[in-house]
Length: 273
Image (tube, rainbow, N blue to C red; front, side, top):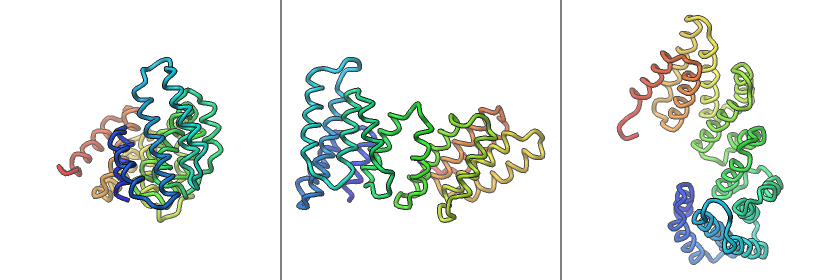
């Protein structure tokens, strides 16, 4: 629903007051028992998140701990045919500093296409926090979601972009990274055109980075230039392409080609973007 979309937008910027307002509206308007339970659980998450934001950094206060324990007890009593309940319980465990418990709950949840957008957002948000130092654990999660046809094109591009950042840390050297990128590109269906374009662009950028003579550099850039032209009307994809290219080229000290990519960004970006 539009309200649910607004709620997700407020969640993403950490604006809990407006999100709670929208959830309260949903609770009041919904007659379906399961739907009402879903939004009541979401409200519990928002209240817990808000309390955590207000808690001073450092040692947790007794009142905060008691409030979180109350939330946990109340949630355990709720019957809900959704994945939101365990996801919220994992978040609350994380708020309490119980990382092992939060990780255990998250590991018990299957990777599935059936998550609602809010469930998926909260799942990925916590997974990214818990596994921030374990990119090898995050990798299959991102590889799953870039192929999830229930996601919007923009979401799949975002997860692909994030996965490429993980590969920077996971793979030692450009050749290993290119091999991973090419392997993933080859196994994706052609209808995931935007994801495949981003992966192809990454691979070509690595070719340019690894090129040892000007002819190979020019050939690689010519292919990159064509993709930049072909995607000039696709703002979200184009932004991901350019950010990754500039990052790769600047790291390799290929500043001439980095400047060319940046110039294309200026050329193709409109005032309204």
